[in-house]
Image 1 (cartoon, helix red, strand yellow):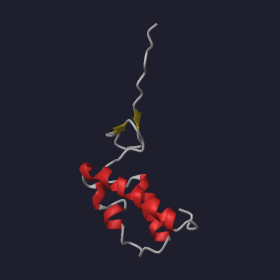
Image 2 (cartoon, one colour):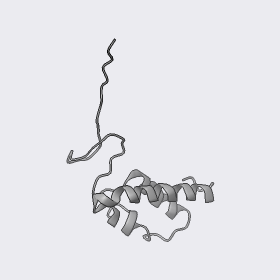
Image 3 (tube, helix red, strand yellow):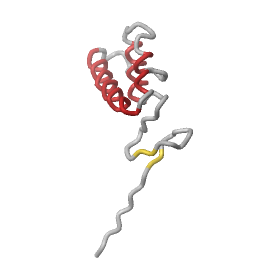
Image 4 (cartoon, helix red, strand yellow):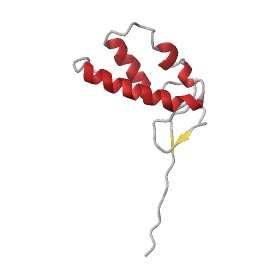
Length: 93
């Protein structure tokens, strides 16, 4: 018996429809990843001075100007968020 495999590509919420990903969330130039949005919010909630992360990881940060840096920044945010959650368990992050 032969089996038929169906590959489904999932398009992300990219307003221009220019990005397609196999594993959402998509990384879209000009928009912070969900991991970085969570990291920035958690960092500010745990005492990081306001605005100090925005130029890098915020929605208009340098991480999202170039597709070649977006995954590295997202990975750094995920790692930072994990560390903050461990260090500040009661912060609600």
